[in-house]
Image (cartoon, rainbow, N blue to C red; front, top):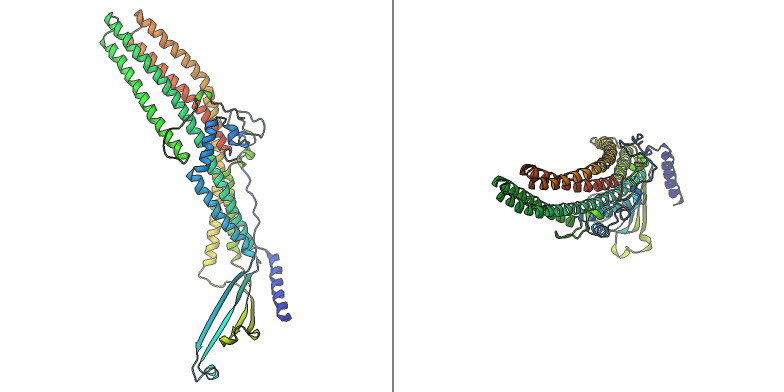
Length: 465
């Protein structure tokens, strides 16, 4: 028995020595191609950015915080992503168990009928029954790093699903905030439109009085009424869009469509630091980029696994237990048996399966690398776009406020001048239309400025902490 054990140890040692010829390559992280600063008028101050802040530090509105909490708990996309983690965790555990032997337990009854003229037929009177029970063990030595590579691949896949889930949460958090702010902006626009509606109703009374005084004709009255109806249309469209946005926010929260309570746009302030920081560090916070790299790691390790299939494999298998040709002696001490098989096997011809697997693995690795670079490029663009949008909306906001002030004064002056016959009704209508449109645009500018901050927060990888 000692002699047999020595042989097993010798073969296993041979496998370990062969392991020095290790064929699996070590993964090296690709270099980021974002050495230059982002295209932006904002000067980088340091590497600390809003992406380092949790979402409840960025969004201070208590109602919004409640909605984000609700969305994280109930959003269906996030729940689906969480189940992906559960599945990936199971595969990761399976990958870690690759070093362990396979053990099965079985009980068999074998009946053989021999020719009575054969050697065994004469010996066993034409037939033989054999009863066997015991475990069967098989183990493969990780000579070429196949098991290790598979373990690292499943671990990378698990971490990828975690990062992908974080990316989903980041998207959900920022989407909830964006729709919430858009709802408040439409509330503000609706308020302006309704106030304008009241003023235009009064304008009709004034223009009718002027008609009776001979200052204007019936065309002026009808044009003023048409202007009122145009405002009514704006109000109806705003109410419709508010309804759609409430439905969208409800779905993000995982609830049935319905009314959504909210604060006012003027009360909203996002005072997170808006700095470009160090590009490489900023992009490393993005969960989608992290997920893309883990996908690359998984493909890289699976290429190692495919390459190792070209080399011989060392397996050790054994069976043992109780064996007897008579059932009554099955559990006797004399029925104990053991069987050990060791050997190296190498593929010679298998219909090109191994070569195909290797070529496909290399192709998948290249695709994962290209996807990683594409994600990196997209991330850089999104950060640059968000910074540019924030700068643009901030600059426009100052100009728009001046425009609104000028046009509101122009509308007010035109009413007075109309009473004295110094302007015609068309000039009055134009002035009022311009004033209304500029006020609505000012509110839209405020929303876009806030939304640019939200986009920047997501582009920098915020929202999942």
